[in-house]
Length: 124
Image 1 (cartoon, helix red, strand yellow):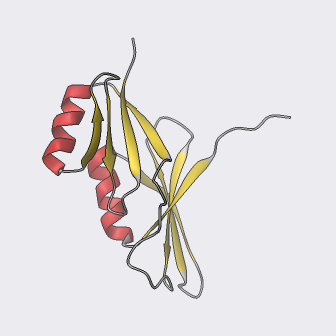
Image 2 (cartoon, rainbow, N blue to C red):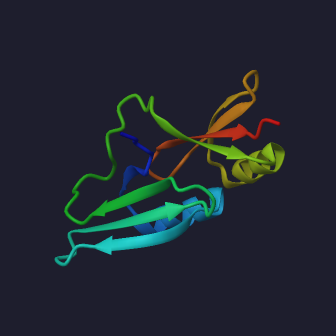
């Protein structure tokens, strides 16, 4: 028996804002979309064009709150980048860096819904 990663899901308040963020910040592109017949949800899968792992963004029409409770936000997705300095400059200009750990050589950005995304340099 073999299991492989398929995707992670983040629920989002504003799907268009999230899609723009993920494309600008991380280069993720829409791979496929599922819209409920009654319009109650939209699911969009994003990919990096390289790995099979995808990020699923789910928008729920009937969600009445202005945010999702992320608890202590101790979970995250991690992304490897081939040019850490350029990535840091980009994210700094976007104003989305929420935590840095220079000793470990990593930092985190947060998306419009405050999900944390770890940026890791490519190790050679």
